[in-house]
Length: 120
Image (cartoon, rainbow, N blue to C red):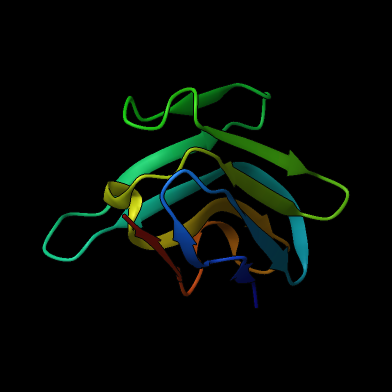
């Protein structure tokens, strides 16, 4: 069974930095896209950053120039480096991945979420 486990969230002052990690485990054949989403209280979940299997990246306009997504395919891990954090970045951040397994084929998987809180 595939699991995505996130780490790295926490409380930080405005202007600070955090680095989120998300590691996929299980009997994995391949991982296609790996993405980061976030959901703030009372708001819909939104895509923050995406890393395709081909190596291209995309960012929400609100985080461009401040956040960087990267991945280590040898570790089945995706990272989100967040710099210049703002109070409006406060949310639960979720890892999402498009994964192909030997037993279940292609599926869409989510992590449990990690809280990021930015104080003003």
